Length: 186
Image (tube, rainbow, N blue to C red):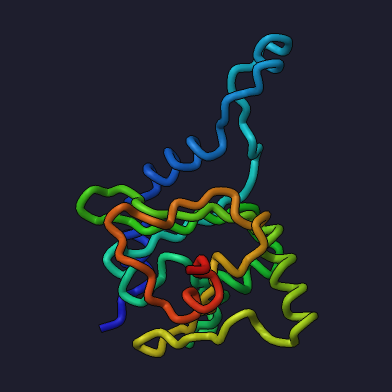
């Protein structure tokens, strides 16, 4: 049975308070010692007013298809409604918090904070250079949408502002792409 978008949004909105906490921890840093001594500054807020997209996925799905090192963006919808990727490419959004929510605790256990300006530029450059997307588009199980999976390790580092994607209980990565392209040499 297809989960209606309102049900999916209601589920992910339960994680908004924890997303706000993570963003606070990520965006507020300790000032340099000279700023403290000379400029009456203990903390620095690094972001300013920005539009932050938040997508929370179910934690139990995170390892099912080796998704710990990727994000997925909705590419199209059967309904024709505008997608995450379309909004991104149209210039909307400054940052993207992509997380994995643990329903039992209400906490976001793993997440990545991405700079959407950098991601947008990389995607445009990739399309211009290679005349294709960085990875194949994947249909959803029920056929209501398709998604563009993007490997975090394939992206330039300036896209990733903060990343907590490896959890202590994680098994070794078995994803063939990751092992062939990103695994440390033995």
